[in-house]
Image (cartoon, rainbow, N blue to C red):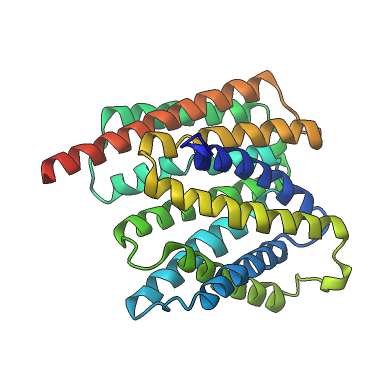
Length: 299
């Protein structure tokens, strides 16, 4: 493609659509089982490709990193966010997922790092935006399922933040694409074990075609094409470009959720979402500025 930013555009659009596919899939089957099947198929495809290429396997401590990331990024983050949209709208799930940089700032603060003024302003702004969004959902909090969905989504987002920080700490010394496949396979094993032990899984023959179509879309678009573009993006594009997807995919999810599922799209949700994403922009800008200053000081 002539446009050098196509990976960012691809992630922005298609990751927004995966929330819709997840929402459709979990209507007809257990959410953790859907996540497990998606991760297993996607992971096997990745691993099979690198076995065919005779790529070297991870060694020693590399396995520890892969296992930890498989738990944080897939078993918890992807598994719980998929479970969460069973009880809340796909658009709301996408917005909550987008605020993971806020958790990164909060986590680093409790680790003793000072917060820049811009980061504090971003935190306050995003929190205000989330409050505006939830204004339309105050009555929903009386419903246990809605509260449970919000809880799952928050834990999923926090897990992704810890996974991002761990990835940064353990700079990639192993093929990131091969690692991604191994993480998916390992995570799917955990999820299959959980659904089997709790008796929450269903026989695969009873899974309806619509859920299989959703899984196929999530594997091909969400787990393969979008992740390849994402890894390429963070390796090749400047940070101010490769973070744009985080602002766009919630918008895609909200609009498609309203069009396809008839999810409520009010002025309050639109304004709250815009405020939240603007706060997120300020936080990301603060993080990028801090990294730039750190690199300048090192040089």
